[in-house]
Length: 259
Image (cartoon, rainbow, N blue to C red; front, side, top):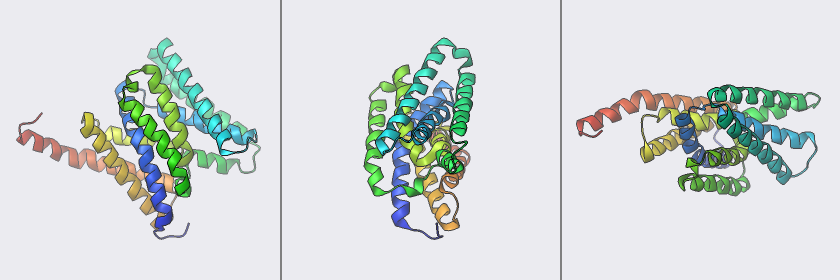
């Protein structure tokens, strides 16, 4: 990509990022509450394996790819839900093992593919800059439905939590990649962890917006990989919020006599 701001490319990419954040920020906050930090990257890896499986089996068409990704993501979610009930004391270890095994299976599937390295890179770092206007309606529909179901109370169901994860991540991992899915879920939630309710959601969404916007602009100006740049920008914005804004915000509330 040539250096410079090409808004016809950047705007749909930014809108795609905001749609991902709409559902991923509240999901990420729930992940932190439950203490199963790496469930998101594990289920994202399952969805990515589904994309690679569709390619490996020569299943043509976007619907076949979506079905394979959602099927494996849902299977992974159900598996991890079962292990959480059966072996809760080692759930984080089980999640880590699942991630490593699924990632290794993806590498094995691509071992004899001439473009295997390219497919693997796309799965990890995504291709958000290739998002077009025509890709946005489906992404908006999926993430909007997940957010509504979440706010409607499905977050209180252990099984619903896992299945919502599978649906949301299936839609997002093909756009932003495994790394940015993890960053979108955890980084804003981690920065806003001392807040609660709507202030926490607003802070998380704001951090996500600034991170995506700064990362996409910098990737265009400096001709850098967009996914990796957005991850680093998200982390930087979150650090500024956590160590600069939050102390000022708490001090102001104390002066006003608010808890």
